[in-house]
Image 1 (tube, rainbow, N blue to C red):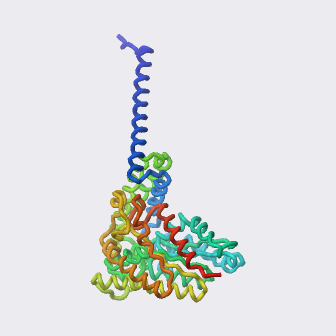
Image 2: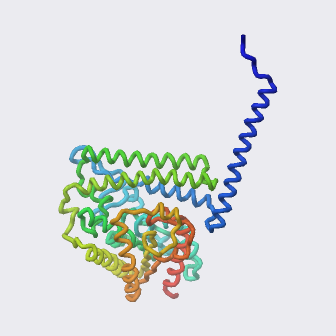
Image 3: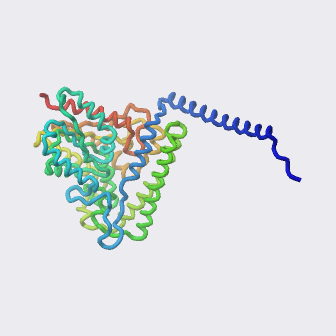
Length: 431
């Protein structure tokens, strides 16, 4: 006997139940979304879809940068396609070389004469500052009557992993290349402590370029099998981060407070896997026998003496940059960047605490070094150097800004742009 077929009435009832269940689910999610937004707003942290999307893109962008890789293959190896060894400041971005030549031609032409040209140097925080707020900086500077009628153009030579004295050498190199900026803006402080101390921990002089960024370029040695396995783990975590970010953005998850925060954590977890693999790989590179060319001269093994040398180098580089610029009637402004690891500089949110972890070598240097940088900054000001201490810029901000130990979101960069623009306007010569 054939089983009884469902009647039209039964099928209709089943569809009604399914539709009701879907409706209840949609309503529940909508109420949860509304409730979540209300609670977040009541706590002073209203959800911002644009900021969430920006954070996902920035985390992915940091992970998508060059891989620290020993050369693979024969003795000659295969050069890193994104970074190249530079004779004066350790390393540079290969793709930027044509732009350097193009700007050289620009500065020799008539357009630059009537333009107020701003050159930004520093590490990845300075690079992100330029990418996110160059337009705001131009607008705010343009409000000064002394710049009326003058186009304002921003040029960046900021590079991830750069630290003093690399910025000093960069600016000297660009001056020799014919660049003629009206303002050199140096945003730094974090790398000079964190990356310099990491160098020391792995046996390299603190003032040498950052070991993970430079050592493999300087030695040109081939990778071992174990190093290749670690490299593969980096690439896998990098690809996972990129895939998750692409899916989250393609599905529009940042438009929902619930799903946006989920996506942020989902992408962040993959990014953390990248950083863990990155650290293991650089530790493996550091375990190689050091050559005289990368190790450098002897340096203090005791942290206090080593820290004194690191902060002294930062201050001396600032004085030298000021002198280079003054000799060319170029305004020099030095900005001490804020960082999550500087205790007391910002009331940290739960999310910032979770995402702001750092290795002990970074924590040791930044927490002990930032008070010394502030003190030296005051001494720089006393010498007539235009120094802006922005380390406490977020002291009254209770919302999420940091998404790792040193990088912050667009609202933080906009606040920094406003502070820098006001300071530059105060520093412009009277006409």
